[in-house]
Image 1 (cartoon, helix red, strand yellow):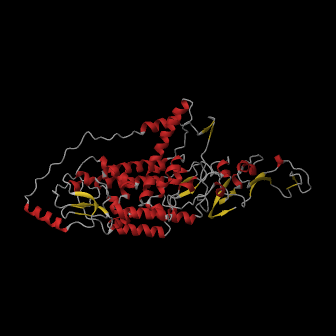
Image 2 (cartoon, rainbow, N blue to C red):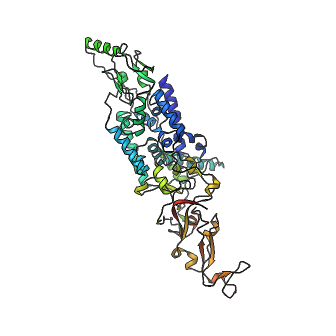
Image 3 (cartoon, one colour):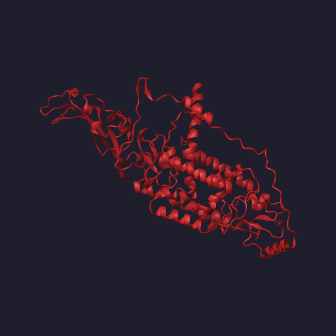
Length: 525
């Protein structure tokens, strides 16, 4: 019963939190946002005392059951191990008592030094978020685009197409490498990553030694068949001494199901009965050497059906429209990112330093951004953490989704009203690229689309000014011909919030004639 209950909870949690990480409509977050906030590391970084107390109490009562169904990375390892489809494949191995605290110490030092992304490489929720956000989310969006194409064919708009694009090569390589390492370890040794590398597993393992409810061995009933030991993914059952390493046991219940003699039970027992252990050892010495067990046949009927993504990807590409030409005549050149002296971080991050210290690069805000302005950074000091860039869109003042989904407090929650007053940067005009400044042509795209009215188009020339009627005149108050002068944009930095509408909508390519320079500390206007 313990195993079945754990499996049901694990599957439900795993599917829902994966949906939360790939969903781009914010529907999942409205109902499931709490699932990211009850993860151990996000709760620790955001100083969520209530969640931390709950997780500690849960561990002290049931042991490391957190790792069995709440942690998505732990469940993923169980799924990979299950696909191996070979029973009795594990054996007891001593814990790596030296390596485990080393990884905890390295993670703590990285956090203290302000390199949250470095510690996030081994934090379970962050690692799983990168794997899903980088490798699974594009397939999810391709499948959505296929459904959108089919729905449009039948004049239905239940789905809408979204862009699928590579946001960062570095994040892709890290996510793929992390998945490969964890998959190999899970395939070969079950919970090796959890019980050797993961800092959360080590910390909770220290608490689980004192858990009230544990899996215990009754030496009087044990027949030394070793099925429990060979099915323990944590490799924590030492049948020679009839002991269990509770710092590594994740209370999965597999051993309870495999034992046919009732020698294992889950309940309150503060210590293993010494007399039972001595009795079992004497009985083993008197008994004849047991016959070598033959390996049980592989259950060929238990085959997993893997969903093919190749057809979905091909259909999605077929549905995609050709957006590389303008009406089939002029080639549209992609915009390029300008060189900024200071990077732009999302509104609600307070400052670049605050984001760098608290963000573990789980990619949830990046995948949730509906405007495609967030992407993983490629710079070493804030690698894979979100930064703002406006090649594909701009940060709409009415959007605050990134601040609502962040579970670690790296991006503080802000309301729409607060968002419109946060200045993350200011616009900078580049004369060399501006069409009106170099040619007698009108544009004004940046001024027309500025949501705060921080950009105005003014004629360039000495003595030009507005008269009492608001018309431009020369120093002698004579009206000027606007077609005979350069009309250039002027930025009021006090009103600019750095939303990037001007940079994104500027028709000049590949580098816009106006771009946003970030502020190290955000200000309110």
